[in-house]
Every structure is written in C-alpha cells, then in structure tokens.
Length: 176
Image (cartoon, rainbow, N blue to C red; front, top):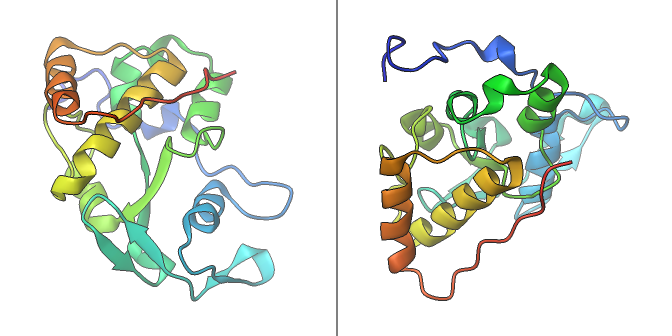
C-alpha cells in the first residue's frame, strides 16, 4: 500500500518499541525467552546463547535467535490505520511492547515477517496451511484486545478463514 493510500507512511517513531525491563531484558528478548522450545542460556545484559524456536508461520525450527524477528501480530502501520492514531503516546508504547497477551508479539523467521510487512489478512497469510486457523484467531484477538477497527476486506478474509476452523476459539483480555 502506498503512502498516498496508507496514512502511516513508515513512521515507526509513532510507537516506542523494545522497552527494557528491570531484569535487563528488552521486549524482543522477553518474547524469545517466552517462546523458546529449547531454552537458551542467558548471559550478561540478557544476551541469549543457544536455544531453539518454532516459527509457526512457515513451520520452521529456528536457531540462533538472531534468525528470528518479533512480529507484531497486527503490524504497527495496520494498528495506526485501525485506530491507534487516536491513542496517547503511552498507549501506543504499551501496544508496541504488549506482553499481556502471548499472541500479540510472535517470534517468527525474519523472512516470513518481512513478507508480511504491514499487511492485513486480506493481503497476506502465513505460507503454512496449518497456521491459518491460529493466525486468524490471534489476529482477531489482538484487534479485539486493543479495540482496533477491521475493514471490510479484512473481515471477509477472517470470516473465510474461520469457516474452515471449527473449534478454534478467539481468546483475549482487553488491554488496560
């Protein structure tokens, strides 16, 4: 989507990301620790060594941690266009670093995250067929959690996905 159409225009400074925690780990490191299949060794400054992760978008086992990106389930640009533009800076920072729901930030291969970019489900879906139900539910949960709007094409795609996902629940806790 071009900058003429999308109001976002690549302005990532509208969200503050990767805040540090009291334990010295930033948001990226906390997500990596939470999603590790084989837990890494934690060194000084929360340096992660070893470990293994599962990128469910493309069904790949990943090591080292540097081969992963932390994906905002609903990308920052999409959130901006869906209502975050009206939020305070503090709420945008909370969204960018949301660890209150494990599905808001997801460790995935850098390749799959870059293919997704800032697209919604009408424009991009994970390449792994077994990922669709989970992805649709997690996208919907994140939109509901943060009270973000859904456009018509996005809604139609999510309903198409849901039609093939009997028994998949959408679980979320409203953001504070």
